Structure formats: structure tokens, C-alpha cells
Image (cartoon, rainbow, N blue to C red):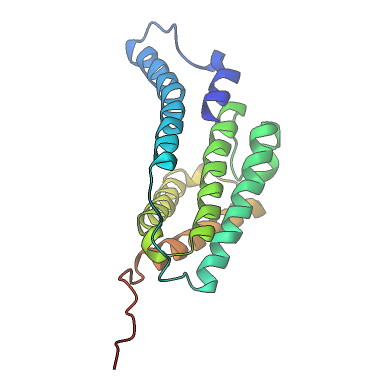
Length: 192
């Protein structure tokens, strides 16, 4: 999706800039988003064709954590998809100004995170989700730091700004709740 956003807004990139760093950054950006998705598809195909079975789920997520992840998935997809398809709605759904390119780039990440949150709901196992929960915590922390760094760019009179803050707080709750949970194997009852 980021490749599509890049190609739709290709005129916004500095492919012909006289500045070598800007030109390098533009080509590097394009290379990453043109090469990584096909490589990921190849790796996915190889993984799915490799024989074996998934380990059984042994420690389900508590209902509150799974529920919050489900809400996150719906929210992320519910904002990301329309934002990608119609970036002009950014002024309605986003707490600060976005250009069409940045709206689509943000939307691509929201959709990816929404799919990931939905996958976490499906997986429903602490051991399988430990690394994802650590990443989710870092995502929340970095978003909070970015919000603090650029707080003057946010329209704090808008409902969306406070909804965004509440969402980030819930991301941190889910992330920390997910990676701080025990991941060891459940013990089977011993035989008499």
C-alpha cells in the first residue's frame, strides 16, 4: 500500500533533485517498498509450503486483552481504509493536518497494524504474541513521544486529538499487558 501511495504521488519525491541525499532517500524509499513486499510473499509461500504443525495454544489471552485488540483492529482498519481511499477526509478524522501523500502513508501503516491486531485476536496465545506485544508497546511509546514532540501541531480542541490520546493509552495497556504475562508452558496434571 505504501508503494501504491508512492506511485500515486510520485511527483512529491526528489528523484531528480540536485541534492544527493534527497535523491538517494527518494530512490531508497522506492526500492524498499518495491522490493520488500514481493520478497515477503516469497517467504510466506515458503513458510506455508514447509511441512509441520503449529504448536497448540496453551495460554489464552484474557477476554479484556483480546477484546481491546479486537477494538483496535476495527478502529485501525476503520480509519485506515477510508483514509487511504479518500485522503481528503484526513481533516475530519485526523487530529493534525496531513497531505494526501502522508495521509495515504499513515493509512497504510494503520491498515497493517489493524490486520496485525486482528491476527493477534485470532492467535489468542501469549507465547505466540510475545514479540508482537513488545513491538506494540514500542509503537505506543514512540507515538506518545512523537505527540509530545509535535504537540503544537495538534488541534487540542478537536475530539479526534483526545480520542487519539485515549487510543494510545489503550495501546500501551494492551502492549504491556501482553508482554508482561507469563509465557511458559501450562503444566499438565501429574499422574497419581
